[in-house]
Length: 279
Image (cartoon, rainbow, N blue to C red; front, side):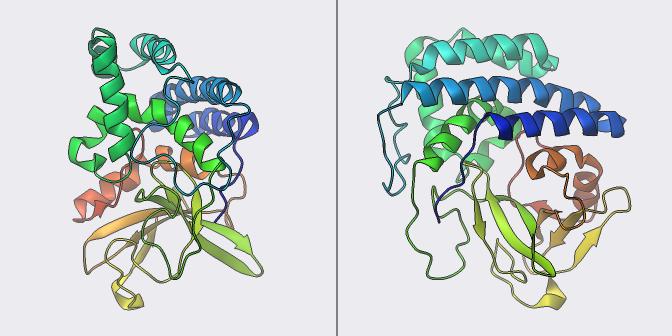
């Protein structure tokens, strides 16, 4: 799997979709407008880091971003982190703003350790600390992981990989992309946001392949979003069906689907991996 290219146009699409969904779904408007500001910063950070790394090619290197954060000094991370913390202090809900202030008060070594720790755990064991505690390092690291993924080639897959072939992160969500007369299932990584092909009838958590044990639920409010559950392990993933809504942007539409999270929790299902804002 060679990672897809990401750039300003992809971030612009995310921002436009967030603004559009905010106007359609008042219950998610605050979350989506905050995400728009985060995505604006991520777009700028992606471009700056890409410029810093120009000429430092890692094309064809297998999984260069674990365990150490690559080229940390070359891309001058801490000044960029300071700018991000200032944004969160000004734009985030009170609890997140307080968390940003706390990180701002850390010394440079501690801030670097925070980023390094998330880089090693992101998408793998970060569920242990919960979405709130991981928000700052996750949101900041996301464009860095996307950038390094575009410079990486994964080894050939011998079977359906449960985790991301590029970085080892767990699936964040599924995507059904149009192919022929139907849709091809892919998984999006919770760390580097890259996609890989995935079997249509298969639980990404436990490997259950019995269709009768893998019920799918769709709410009238979100006809293009599938809640794909597993009765064996009680884990679910959300899948954005682009065959039903070609304007959807999976990463953003997932953030807006707050009622689906509440429904799944009420019915005893646990999400395989939370999204950036825990919605």
